Length: 108
Image 1 (cartoon, rainbow, N blue to C red):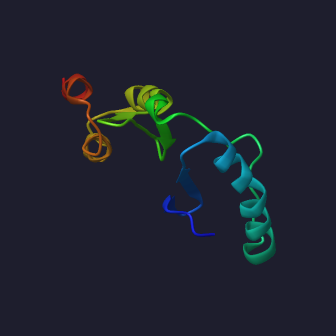
Image 2: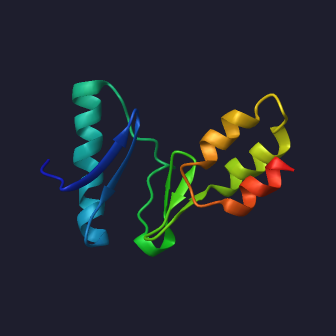
């Protein structure tokens, strides 16, 4: 489809574009491609068009122009479940975002 800015991980993907109309016009062709070639469909409630300044919600993180945050829902779940046994796993999750204070909080 000649999309210049496209990020994909497994079944999640992000497409960046200049304006809302351009992105909206891609929804139907992408849906058809997924249906015809891969036997997949787009989830109607998970298609969002946002400004970059609002952040891109992707793989448990919110990616902003100059930093990456852990998604609030992911952070709450982590704080409920963290213990000494799974601490290394959560520290691995946190090393991909800007969250110094959160690391300090779970280390205590």
